[in-house]
Length: 196
Image 1 (cartoon, rainbow, N blue to C red):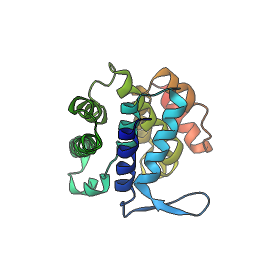
Image 2: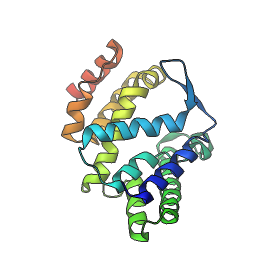
Image 3: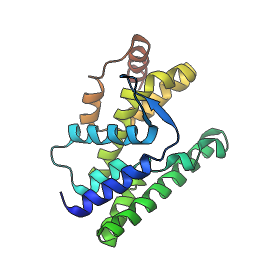
């Protein structure tokens, strides 16, 4: 690993650690929500690729960088509000990460490349962007799907699973089908895939 990579990752994690929202893990310990999310993203990348590039590893680690600073509640309800929030959040995370990278010694081109990955520009055509999307989908399915599905109306949840599935690579599909799920979640996934 280059020293620029190590400096950038440390700077990203220092910002993640400022997240005021705690998350409690299975062992009862409490940690900043965003830091745990970032670590989960990195773990999935290790399972998806044997030797991911430094730039992809940075993009995956920084995908939600300082997301708490742009609350979803500041945007209108509905799909347009959601998509606007997602666009603004990814632009902020990309710009902040690019600045951290340049400070650590990466070139402007490398920093721009990571920012475009975080914005998911080229999804469906760019293998690095696909890997980042796969990690996000797998983290969601493994860690947040069960809670989320209890708060969202059934038919809407089926559509969410279908959309999530549609964004994933065949490799990520195979990994997703090995995840342990409660009966309600497993039924939701089966229904979504059967009618997809």
